[in-house]
Amino acid sequence: TSISDQPPKFEYANEAREFLREMHTMKDVAYKVIN
Image (cartoon, rainbow, N blue to C red; front, side, top):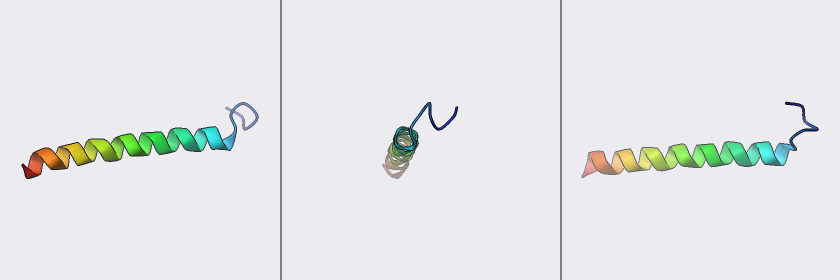
């Protein structure tokens, strides 16, 4: 995948979305463990 195919902003958005999804999953797990 070359830079001309996908602008860096789009790539960053995907990374951020994945990161947020992982954080959300970890939060759910932690919540279940605590309760």
